[in-house]
Length: 152
Image: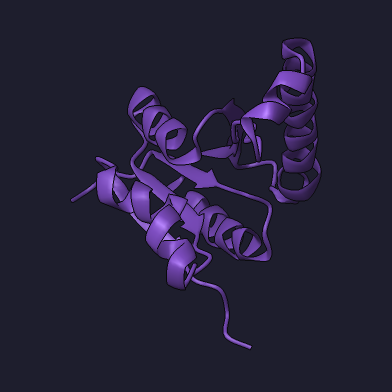
């Protein structure tokens, strides 16, 4: 029987992530596991190489610091405050390409289960970009539970 000791809840702060959070908390309680709440700040993407010349490295670093601080505050206010005192939880805000950072985190922390929402990209967006959840499902060494948006 598989033992679930560490659960990673990955969020992008969407409504669908909120649904995934509820499930992650439920599973954390049932398995008396440790919960990691994870968000990844993606790299800056400039629409044109010319724009990159106008943005200083210092401004880029400040953006990352601000984004990491904002994400940490969001996780604490939106998710951490909803947890009961009996659940163990840690907040991790990473920076980089979301799927790669999540996969690295899963390996480093030896996570047993990932819970994350899906967005259901369609058409060309899905063809070119895929989704973070899809990339994690394909490459994770642990089980991944994806939560689909509720249909209206």
